[in-house]
Amino acid sequence: MSLQRFTGSNITSLLPGEPLWKRVPTTDTDGTRLSDFMMIIPRLRDKPRDAMQATVQRIEGVLRCYQDNVVFADLNLALNVLWVSVRPVPGICLELPTAIKIQVPEALLVSHKFSND
Image 1: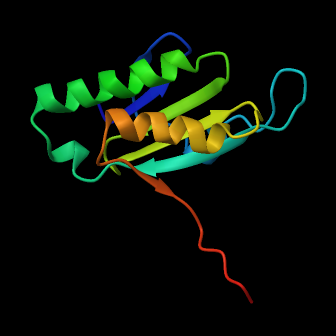
Image 2: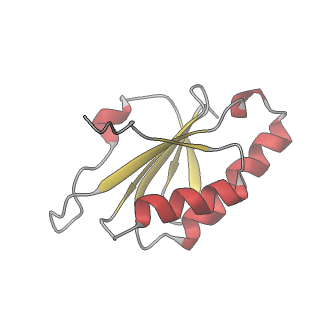
C-alpha cells in the first residue's frame, strides 16, 4: 500500500510505477486546464495499519464529497504526500484542502511563499 489513486468512487491501491508527473492529467476531457494542490500528512506511513487506513478512509470520504470536481488524487505513503487535481472551480484549491484538514488535522497544504518584492 505505497501508492494509491482516487478513481472517483474510491481510492485504489497501485503498485509503484510511472512518476507522478507522467500520470497526473493536466487537462480535462474537454481540454480545460486543471488545477492541483499537494498536502503533506506528517508521519502517516508510521501509523499503525488500522490508524493509517482510518486516515485514508477519511480522505476518501472528503474526495467522494467533491467527486464532481476531483479528477485525480494520489496518496504516496512512502512520501506522506497527497496530490489532488481538480477542475478549475473558483476557490476549490482552498475549500477542498480545508475539508481534508478538518478530517485529518495533521494534513498540511503545501504552498509557495509570496514575497512583496
